[in-house]
Length: 393
Image (cartoon, rainbow, N blue to C red):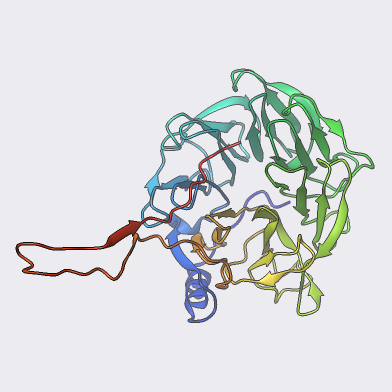
């Protein structure tokens, strides 16, 4: 439920850098640190190499074209404070959306038409925590307890919006152009999970009613399957994170597992993402509220959420996100509270193999014969094993 975070101290930042740099701890590399220790909170990647990461209204959005080797600082709207950019969603190579929860009265939906290099504020005034666009609708979620918490829906590309039936919602995802689910911000009667079958134009309450706070939801594209790793509502008897799964577009749900480390359950950040049904979650870094404060950073499941294996990487505050990409789901971009962006290419623990980035050269072997200055014979092949995953729902 935390809407913004304090700046991490330089001591904590230095400790985290040292901790993750210990040889053999895990195969994670630090790529970037936001100014003033502002934390990264969300992102969107087309593939391993091209993507965007959002921090806060004063630290901004960065973009990489080379897998995190270099970063471009985007131009964002002015006069926004140190409040979390909560989501980035790109419709295609050029057009996309971001949301922010600025406590001032500002337009908190941003739009880009140049691939995320520059952003402009648009839409209704209010605080928004998630956004998604289908061919039928643009849906922006709000969990504003002190204002209009209704979801805003646009069916004309964001030119105009109307209030949707959902209030106090957190997560949203779709498995195709029609079927999507939203989750609750609160465990109380004020919220509830809902589903759509028409691309987000209309929404129906899921029955029996589910009112468990869940920062995100993960839809397995091209299937009827959804997953959640609800962080729970601290004001309503929060319980350690349980993994829930639906196999019928969100109509019914089953608890398939719980997060546990050394025999004790713990909280996730509320975010869950994956590659097909290979899933990842991240540990909530709040030691004061976590029932298992020694639980470590990132965890992966290869049995549909039943059991979880620690794979290294950072913890983060609840209500933050990470990104899973790559050819085989081994590339993960994750963040921590000190403003550091981390990346792994092997699932974090060396168990997921991704194609090498550098071109592979092989032959019979390569053989040169005769006077080298006059003639040469060679059997040579050059193969670039990049995968292609540029399709966007």
